Length: 258
Image (cartoon, rainbow, N blue to C red):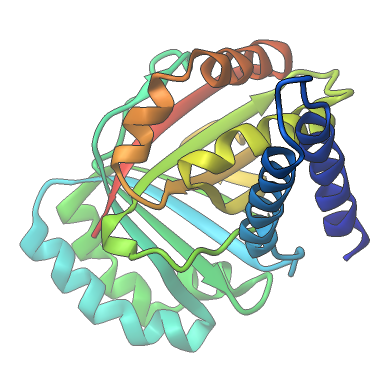
């Protein structure tokens, strides 16, 4: 909770500092209006939740046979639930952008959370699951799995079907001093565009891909807000500076919620 309060305090100081430094031509009423709007922005950011230490698996795969893949999903759903696994999101992948050499974008991503740390391994070792998983091997290829724990997430009341999602897979440089502070400065710039980090997962293992440091799932309340953001050169410049300063490799995957 102290971490969340600190973030809110920093954002409040920055925003009020900008609002109260009014020019001679700016009225007191206009300044007060700016402060009120800024407070509403902070309230919107209240969707930030504390770390619950939940275990996650991000499955990237290329589905080639939807009929067989759907049979696999139906046949293993109860086995997954019994092991403590629950699908939080499933996405179609719309493209890729980044600098990870030879990275082949999947066409499907499944986000799974687990009730206990070893639940994924428990499912993989289940004999019934092993039998049914043959359907997965027959229907999909280039299967990669990233495992980790959830650090935070933001929630929104917006209609999920109207959102635009984006996943970022990041590899840090050795020296990340000042990274959190820079993120806190960028956050308020993104807020006007209905931009949220739905899930931040710190990776600790991976199969089929080098283990990244972090996987983040973002979304805009509405798809058109991404178009508006792309026109804001100051925000794009800040994000580009962050990537250049703190990341060795990264890839962005625009997503469509299934």
